[in-house]
Image 1 (cartoon, rainbow, N blue to C red):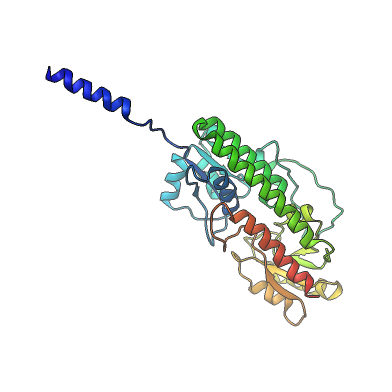
Image 2: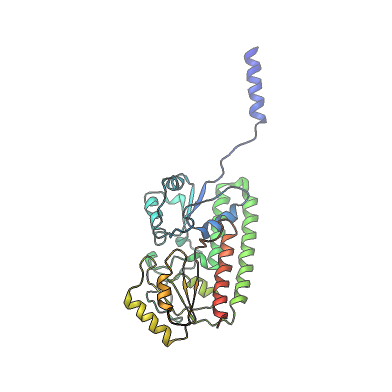
Length: 303
């Protein structure tokens, strides 16, 4: 009698207990990707950011705890080996099922990296192997939409219980992306499109979206400071052309840019393609795009 009573109580507990299931474990490599992914998962689960403030994805040092997060994740959203090299080493032997390489999404617009430090806005762009593709894909509003849709579709397949939330979140993100595209387009319209230099060639997706064109990049490789010969060449170029502004980046030393503009009237400002100074979360991508537009607009309006 006692055993039957215990069995009956256990049966009632099992029936009354709510169904418990694991939410998708998703991580993202850099702040702009993390923002877009978190936007789709907002209100459901937290997305872990792997490479955060003041770290360059090219050479970030990943802590053991970060490595464990990568290995435990069901989905790792990242650009690809040409950007996040330290992460590529960890994922080298991982299965493709647990990775979303944004570089390889069919819906992503890919632009070839520009080999020269002086840009020609009329040069043709082609899509070749990954090694020649500009990896700064998140700075295109069309690519941001493609990332949101790809993440939404993966989540719908992995977690049907929260399908309505993912659809609603993704729909709101897509509307916000279209809104900020139109807002920035108006903000940068009619600006002098050929009067500034960037620190390195990280912005051509943004440039194509909004029809602006820098004249040059200070360095061909962001990990390496330009040599004396290139600095001299850039100083001469500034004197001979209508260059208004040079932008440095927060994760690299601004001293070399100061050397280039020394003795000239060229304005020195900062562009941040990764949003390293911004608060991580679903708003970061939008804040990043607006910040780039404002920094460019302020520079171009000052002349």
